[in-house]
Image (cartoon, rainbow, N blue to C red):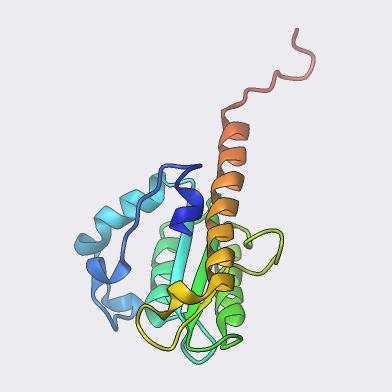
Amino acid sequence: SLYGAKKRANIEYHKLADYVGVDRSYAEIEEDKIKPLLDIVDRADGLVLGSPVYFGDRSSLMHSFINFCSRRNLLEGKVISTVSAGSKRNGGQETTNVYALFENLTHGAYIVGNGPKTCQYGGTGWGGDIGDVVEDEFGLETSMGTGIRVSQVASILKAARETTVPEPGAG
């Protein structure tokens, strides 16, 4: 998704585990360690969240992060999509993306999929071992489409917010 977005937007890549560690619940996230990431999320127009598939769902770390951000109203008005990777094709990537997108939607985000030609709920990579996903052309295509879609919609919304509309009856 980074490669899809990089020609259309200023992008940053952040690993959530670098800020909070792994295997943390929402209650265990330390505010001072995650504050720099929250500032980044606050100023971002769009986000692509990535997760491996865990029993057809997103990681607990992603779930905790979404809830952490939502409690601070950081997701409202953001364009958000997801990418996921599983060990086989049709290995839960779509449901992982759907659960995360629905959760973001309930917190006021604008959610998007990867767009034409596959019109899925985000990027769906597969690979049984580290690095195998680079051989997954379909997964790479859906993931790049996700980055493109988030950057396109975010730029449209940003332009709309920056456009002033005259008051009715003025001029």
